[in-house]
Image: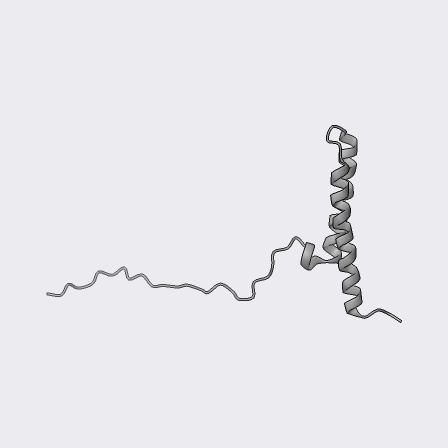
Length: 87
């Protein structure tokens, strides 16, 4: 039996959250003076972040939220003809 979409969404969310916890652990073990280990840790973090954006894009995605209402259009008319003076 296949899980329903709610179970799948929960599983994706939990996996993305697990990756977030792994990122914190990776950052905590880094020694800044070891450049090779730092590069390896950076790669490990980037891979997990990429996976997180695919598993839970609504929470970890990089795109800006969509606007629900468009900005109102503003227009105005400028009268450049001289007006006759009241006399």
